[in-house]
Image 1 (cartoon, helix red, strand yellow):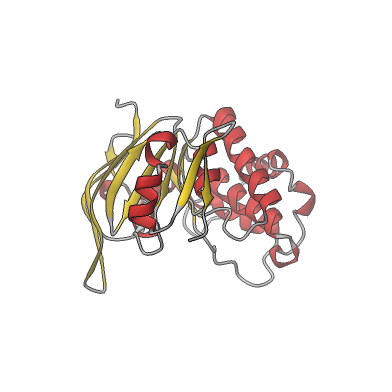
Image 2 (cartoon, helix red, strand yellow; image 1 turned 90 degrees about the vertical axis):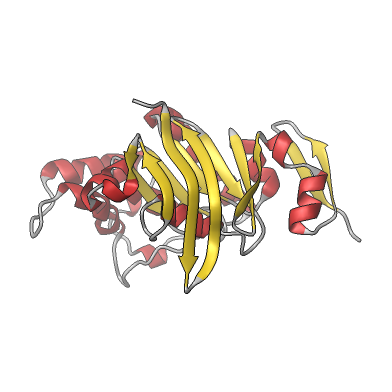
Length: 258
């Protein structure tokens, strides 16, 4: 079996007749962290949803060697877990009940969760330090706490591939770092593969093994952070003036006033 967890070739997505993603190709090896960056409207979130099997597309998308469009919905959910930018949460839902939704692929239709399902979720909540919130409603939690719960639901699926769409976009800098460190730790502990979108370029470069820059629905650059986060690439595709300087864990992108 291929060592690639995700293989994407010639991915195209149309929404309302408009071509949003145009010929994207990318690979993610098992255990690797790849972050997709790009200006607003570049097609990052659309590409991520298509890779996760949530949008119709053309081209090739394989998850652990299996075409995503041939996977039954339950089988796909056991393979890949997606956390969107703003997950829909029914009003009044409590943390434990929300995390238990991650066990849906393992529960028979019209069935109920088993003791094993509840134990699996409790273990995930404990590992993310949110077990103490199990009985609380999600709307009463802070942004960082909610983000941990969203991750808990994804991890409860037992999937080895995580698709994370801007998981830190609504968080302050402290909670951003907290969530990213958590993802990195879980990746190592659970041998997870991570494909993520992010806006914060410096932070993205610090954590990702590799980066993919999308612009106007196509891959404009791919490689390490140092190869992608260049002043030339950012000036061309973001239309900004920046300085890129070497930091402790990768390049630092510093905006320069015009």
